[in-house]
Length: 275
Image (cartoon, rainbow, N blue to C red; front, side, top):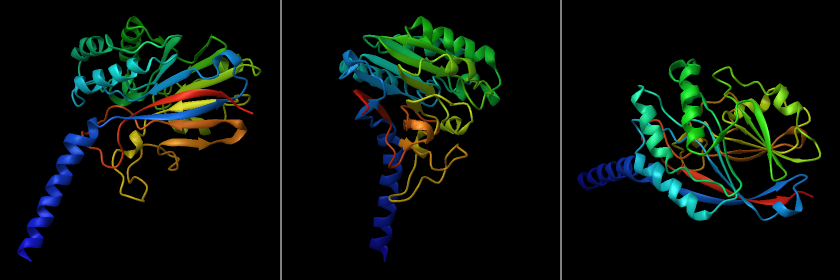
């Protein structure tokens, strides 16, 4: 009995050390196809890297984020997109920290596009002045920050939708302005936004984050904690109504520094034309 008790104690200690020191920084680069309706022929085979939930601030090591950026840069993607939560806001000193880390922000060969998340709006998701500073710093680092706006780059329409929890998710004009004959991808931090009745005419992919995949997930079971209403939105790919597809990133950073069975990720999509 004594030996089994020692073994269980050692197992618990090693598991705790792993969830705290190893997995939060054990980045996985996920490679996947992305079959996009109406994709121009000259974009077939191009690559798009999706990052989310950097959470630059007091709980995520700057080196982890910078090393992630370096790995993405080495992939030489055509498009880089970030779906919000650049920071975990605590005080104004973080703006300089954000500026310093984003000096290493990867640049897509065609574009780097970003949207904002709830944490970019500060405490209670209710400080637009904080979000404005985040957007300005990200823009100065080379990202085109879209806040309920759309752009067309190389025949690919990219829409950046603002955050749902911050009550800034206002997709109306940006979605209705899209050309239905042209390829489209939307960035929307919170996956619950895809269940809103605002997506009429949108026929493409929606990239999201926010959940961190739950950060901790027992084997073969769903994660016990998810910050979404629709509990099926954990991480990975989901088929939606209206010809839409959703991909939820597990994110780069974290809130509490703990991950188990939910490694941080960046996702590299190879663009293909949908049948």
